[in-house]
Image 1 (cartoon, one colour):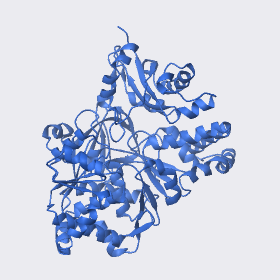
Image 2 (tube, helix red, strand yellow; image 1 turned 90 degrees about the vertical axis):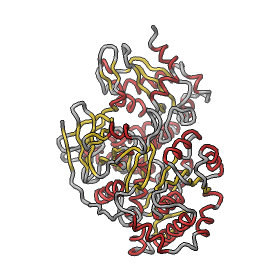
Image 3 (cartoon, rainbow, N blue to C red; image 1 turned 60 degrees about the vertical axis):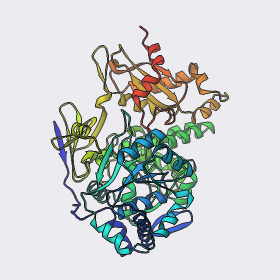
Image 4 (cartoon, one colour; image 1 turned 45 degrees about the horizontal axis):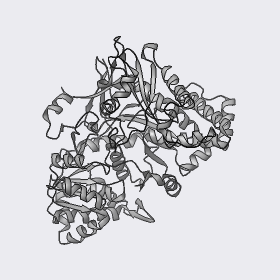
Length: 589
């Protein structure tokens, strides 16, 4: 058993709550720009006034202290405004992914006991009304309901908001975030103001490269996810100028317009940027230059972790490719972005070194909804690519005898809403059992090795962690998803889906035209290309753990077809059930 504990740098007092930074910023830096919305700038003072005005509207509508209020919308300024207004009237925000099905909406709003819900569009509002009649109040952002709420709240005294806001303490519930439900019905994680404040307040001092004077970010991940929500809190607290990108299809144009100094992403975002750049270069006959630049970036970053750093020849080569390739890639992110945070899934050492080598340091971290969510992260003062970093200040991480990662600290939630059995299973003797497997280095860097419940035991008794193989297969530009199988079977195999955005360019490079991906499942050239990804993954494991057979599936996984959660995690059980015929074909009786 190994354990690492880091002392907190910020202590949360009993009377602290998440609205405090909004009022403090308005008082000390009233003219500082807090948000960019379209062509408009919203200052700290203007944001405080907007939050207070909407909070008065909620009070006039009958929302009381402790009431749960749903919020179903894409990432946009109004999401953040509503979140802080709900807190300012003493209530609790319940995020709902805007892609959620009627059944999921019904469960979340009913289980949380939401008395009202904000919807982004009329379609969302209809889904809420049809699935959740108990949520009598439904306000639609796009229909102008926020303005009407503000107008109806003008009769409420300013003191009422201040009394509600100041009555909140650190132990009061701030939000109930429902888990993505990869293994069953979503559970509501109850997070207090202390949980969230302890997490972000201790992270900000450690991430000066991100949260500094003049910093700007573009937020495009779903705010219903705890990871993006934490960045929202940090941006407000540290007065980072923040813009929103509701539609990721416009990201490149948004990057050019906003020119962020840092971004928050998940590995799939960084993979797609890399894959698109690589395919474009190869399609234009510049593949050899790009491949040489990639090798140089990785070598340069790897050398940074060694005594003496990069040698003279490598520095010269790096300078050349900075002019030819790296500068253009940085320009695609607006030209000012030098750092990023990645979470939600493993990034992989190859991509981490590639991006750092071209001048974009990606600080990979690890956490769960139940931990507010950040547990560990790499930072400028201590980065080790291939790990998820060291514990956040105020956090203790322990590796149990069976390899499970246990966590203790103010960031850990107190309960699952209305689910005492699940709470008792997750919180044992003051430790949160993450369900993830990992290892700690002597200096406290955490590496994730897999999920405890996903460990595959072959018929020969070999324990296999699928994540190691899946992450490396997914690193290939043509691969979208990979699910490793073999529990109780004689050997390890994999179900693979093709990235349908990358496929046309690959076919074009071969002088072929686009066809239905399902028609290419047995295509020799495509299978040979995917085999290179499998071979690369197999080099990371023993022969007994290696993928012996893979099958290409006829289509990619989607949230709409049920294989992905709203946060794009694969529902392994659903995939195995959905593609049972494919699995039987791999392991004939």
